[in-house]
Image (cartoon, rainbow, N blue to C red; front, top):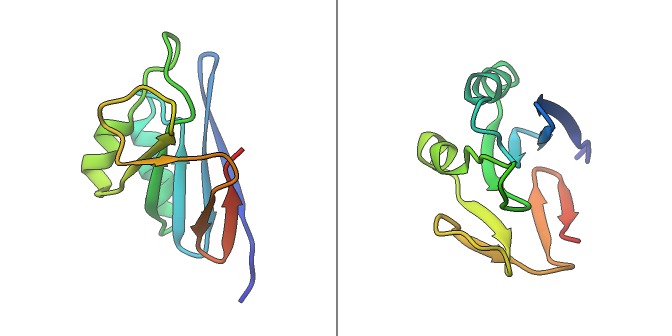
Length: 108
């Protein structure tokens, strides 16, 4: 199997978000509240299924779409073990590995 990882960057103001994909699985990283249509369109166009919604941080300039995507795609929300959030489903630690399609991603 080919272990290709594809990255698509999205920008909303000064906030950057990403969809990483391998095979037909995707991780949406730091989804911005204003980009639902863009994410949905990209995922549909590329026939991707979100496996994880991942917020790397929470603070005043990051208005997350994670809760909406969680409901829309039935995908769990991951955050670092020390992040503050009430919608998180799984907390991750440094050096933990996440599988995505044919790839493994390390939390740093």
